[in-house]
Amino acid sequence: RQRLVLLRAAALYDKFVDFAVDSVSRFEQLVEPDEIVKVWWKNLEYHSDFSLLFFQNHVGEILAEDRRTVIKSHAYQSKKIRMLRSAVIDGGEAMQVFNMAIFPRPCFDLPIFCADFFTSSSRSIFVLDLNPLYNVEADKAYKDKYYSELLPLVKKHSKLLPWGEKLTGESLQFFSPIVLWSKPESNKEVDEAIYLAFQDYIMAWTRIIGAATSETDIDATCRNKVAHHRYLTWRASKDPGRPVLRRLLGEDRCEHYIHEFLFNGLHDLGTSSFTEYFPEYRCEDGTVNTARSIIGKSYSERPWNDTGTFIHRSG
Ligand code: BLA
Image 1: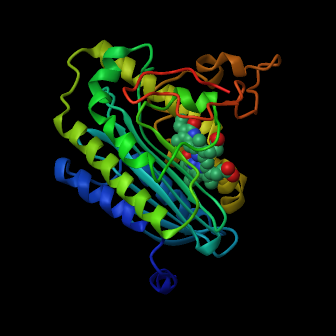
Image 2: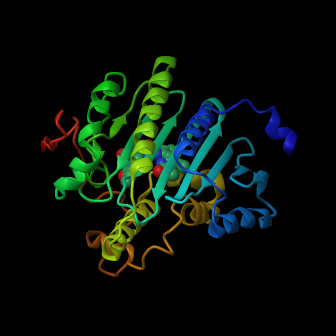
């Protein structure tokens, strides 16, 4: 098993994880993930038909059901970070996926670092953002606090990573005015641009967390907790990565991976259900509408201008 790992070339996105971990480590001492994540690692060992290639402290590596694709999962925590986790899916030439989220502890109102990159031989998808904890249009102070200074990053990177096709309206409400959303061609220049953008956003986020001071007000911490829980509830239910993960892991393990690992915190940070947060998805029989979007797709161009003002050019 170990040999199989050693013989594989590095996946396209391995260096992204290394860069993020190194950068965050300059500000925060990253330590082993907490019990829940360890339980998740350990659970894998007991799935006898499941190929655990490697697992140690921060990293778990599993062989998918196609017996070719490797899924590498990293997890860390620190004083200020509830969980830094990533999933690197190495499907060779056919598919490379990188998904990283860094969740600050709820005593901070900091944005959630979010990267979602997918590349196949024919197309790629690129989402990079510091997802706001609060609606940036309704909460101007939050927007000014975290995003005003970072707006030049958009101009810098959107030349090579221009706005992608239409997005679902729902996704947009979780994005900030500095989001980079692109569907670039897969080539070397774009790979380089993606790495540079990722480095800039990681450095911006680590500077923010480095300077952050904890809320002193318990109500503020509770509000942050609810905002995190709402975000996790959304993503665990409507994540665009689900079909790929289902194919690779099978239905049960996919759900386990999404609920216990990728969007860990769902069980601890709040108790509201999906339809309590998103009532528009409630069906008449009380179940959750399985559609990914109710609003539909919109925004064929970046809906923020250079100063980060939302300009409703939907359509
Ligand atoms: C595709 N990921 C996408 C797309 C978006 C995002 C916008 C394009 C498809 C679409 O329009 O929905 C990302 N959408 C987000 C994010 C939010 C959102 C970050 O609403 C935040 C609220 N994606 C994941 C995970 C994996 C993943 C965990 O979040 C896998 C481990 C993979 N994303 C993934 C894949 C695709 C994708 C495989 C391509 C899906 C397809 O079009 O076939």
